[in-house]
Image (cartoon, rainbow over all chains, first blue to last red):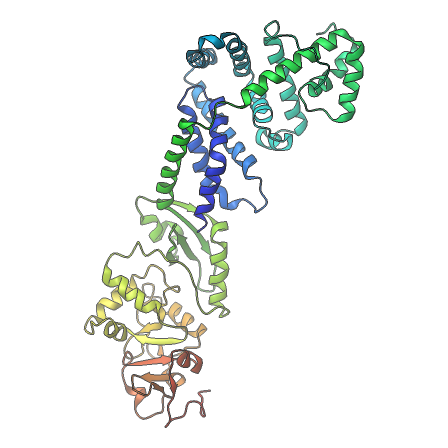
Amino acid sequence: MGQPDFDAIVSAHHGEIHRYLRRLAFRVGEAEDLAQETFLRAYRAWRTLGPDANVRAWLFTIATNVFRNHVRSETRRRTAHATVRATRTEREAGGPEEEAMAGEVRTITEAAIARLPLRQRLAFTLRKLHDLEYEAIAQTLECSPESARAHVFQALKKIRISLNGHLPAVTEPER
Amino acid sequence: MSGKPPVCLDLEPDLVAAATGEAGAAATERVRAHVARCAPCRDEYAGYRAVDREVASLRAGPGDDAASTAARERLLARLADVRSRLVRYAVFDSPLGPILVARSEQGVSLVEYLGPDGVAGSALARLVDVEVVEDEADLAGLRAELLAYLAGRLTHLDWPLDLGLVRSEFQREVLRATAALPYGVVTSYAGIAGELGHPRAVRAVAQALRRNPVPIVIPCHRVVGSDGQLVGYAGSRVGLKEHLLAVEGVHTERGGRPRVARRALYHYEENDAREYCVPTCGDIARRPLGRVVLFAHRDAAEARGLVPCTSCRPDLHPLP
């Protein structure tokens, strides 16, 4: 009864949703559980979707909610500081020596993203790393498209400040 | 940043947008004209361009690699498990009162007339090791068909069934034989027992049909006592059976216990010529049901390959 359709949804979107949650999650392995929960929730509700629904944006919304609930329960146990440190240690662990310089900029960028207030971090990740439309981000974060845009703008400013002095100058005047 | 001239502050959102590929043509043009003559904003712009490139380099990873593939495999296995245990249901108002319909992945597993306790008192509440979800949207199609059936606009509910709640192979056989009874046809418990090659298992057949998990869809209401009595339906709610038969054109006579009004039905008793009769043909109306099968309409008889009797001529003298 339409079950193969849902398997098709998993095939089409699991990779990206899993990647999104890996970006957000604090620990390796956590993302898999969060992605699983996302798709199990989606499975229970997907028949109520209209035929014209944007399945991808809908899955991002569910994944975001799953993550936010997770953060809420997680912050009861951990401090934000310990979390950021854990993230950095894990990500630094595998970096090859020869990529140290590029790796440093990347690490700073990732740390700057990890330090963003949650809504800015979500808006930034959805827009800049997953190309979601501002309309969809606004629905996910339950705000207006203008605030979604403002969150991304604030996030970029903070990342820019963190990277001050770490980036080679880019001199071309436009793309 | 507070030291910036107002014009630069005003332009900042556009500048960030332009540097990160999000500005429209007009804003891009404004930014380009401004940075051409404002050195601090030129640096800002260059800085955001660098941020944009750095962010772009993050887009690729973490990739759809082995960990992700393994995670997807585990998810699909988990989904298959959830799916096999998931039961979706809805409760419909109907002329027969509230009816609960539930279905699993395989098909409809339960059709139940709800009592005063509603869902809490239903067979659904007694299921173990399943996850039960109310899902009206999912069952909306079945609802429409069921209501059309009860209104006589649909003569067959062609629903995939899940008979997982049926415990014995014998009950399964009884249900299969009953499911094969066409619209407007009536037989007896003895008739089903005989058909299955267990002519003495009349009570067992009656028990099996009493426990039919999907009444209406498997039309156990078309099976009555050998004397035509509407015995046992959904507990003791013979009125429901009467209603369902009436929808198909099979009427009952009152006075004592309700029984099928044979004088208004065509009769068939097995014969080589495969002829069916009106009830006044010889003593056919006095033979027990089961040996005799009843038809509400000539169409129903003829659809089964039967022909009008050459003595009583139901084709020339059809029942009113």
